[in-house]
Image (tube, rainbow, N blue to C red):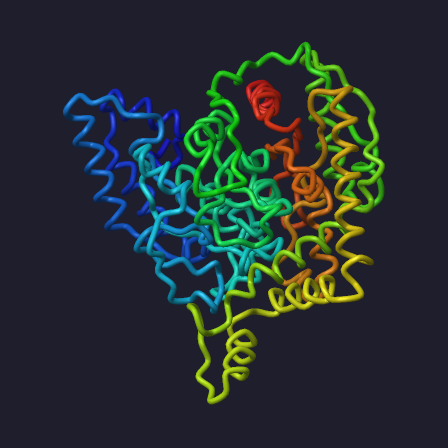
Length: 481
């Protein structure tokens, strides 16, 4: 096994025993990026000099006998909507093409304190708007399992970088499935924590009541280690929770004999690929054979979730992206009149999908339509959350497919945005309700060209009960290939 193929906990064990150095581990990742990324394009910005400097500092600590934490000396890739001091942060947009962040996001600060090695920034759909990473101003990322297919989105670059072993792990952001869906398409682990579990300070906002940062890793244990490092209250984010600090690694017990698993009928109805359905059902059967109690449940307002999400999300986008006006910062088109500066800067600085969502959100919030659309959507959001509250009185976790299909071909859904939006149909409910969810690989589907494409299993849990979804995910992982 090459060094860049190690997991976090495997690499940490070798570093602690001085079997390898952080510099060697970092160089292995950088060499793989140089070799593979021309075809995959997972990275927008690479910072090899900074990475190697950080690695040498960790190696010095270890050589002096200092104990280091589980993330110290381990390379990580960061989605390009999280600010790193002194590093370009584009959010995949022409609007921020030359923006260099003057500060660290809170999650970056926490990882820096943990000794993480930053390799660079990963590609993404512009301002995190998309399900395929095709909306990036810099160009699309490709799926390492099949270069003709998308890696999912909007954290496609992060997922692809982990799946191709260009990095040991990565951070992504999830507004409607943007960690879990690309994790499913790329065959890796993607964890969306409970809303407010992780600070959003320094994350370029898309939809503030839905956004959440989380890890993309090679196994479940790694996800728990990263969540340990990045979660917690932050005085710079008023929405971050005060919750009790938890060591999520302690939840990794491969025993689910007392666990009740809910299977919602609404997620296995029309629209799901039959091969995906078969793989997910096989995973459910496996969990039942390991002692879990399977319960059929209903989440009756699921059918309204996608429509609800695509009203609330664009509304918040309309408000959040108003700051990009060609005056304060970002792309500015030179014009004689102030109004023309506004119009030209936003017209040229934003891509088609961003403009589409801004217009939709502005219409939804406009006088005469606010009550008819936005207010009604918020009421439906409450009903969706109540559905989950009622379900979790009967079960400990809920299991669904992560995506109704495997990764689709590049260009296949770009022309019709509505078909692209359907890629989020199984993930948006968790964001609307604010509950945690994880996607883990549960099998492969063979294509006509004999490519093996991963299928993701989604495990949803109660608010602030990441321990239970990690436990179920870990048990499944330890008892399957």
